[in-house]
Image (tube, rainbow, N blue to C red; front, side, top):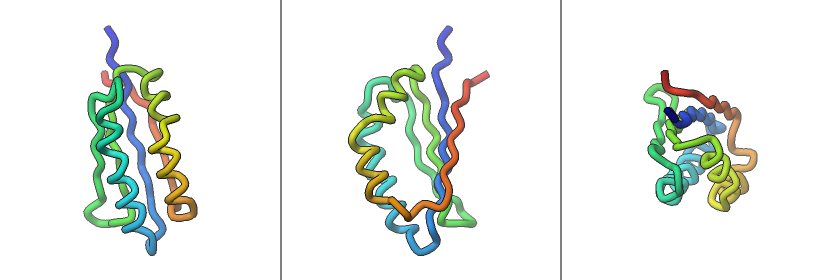
Length: 96
């Protein structure tokens, strides 16, 4: 049984770039949710530290998630937020 792939991505913006990073992350939601293999794609912002964002994603397979990672809207996000992100951590996980 294929349990799919869960992605937890934590993004921390520079304190003076929070709004830029937030607006660019929001742009990713609609096109990503339309992608083949995307089951869930939810963005969260930390209640205590507004510079911290978290994507909780569920994909049908790692292969389909990797296709997502090479899409143009992700490249546009990377270009728009270059120098605005302090830290980025990503975990590939399997539901148990």
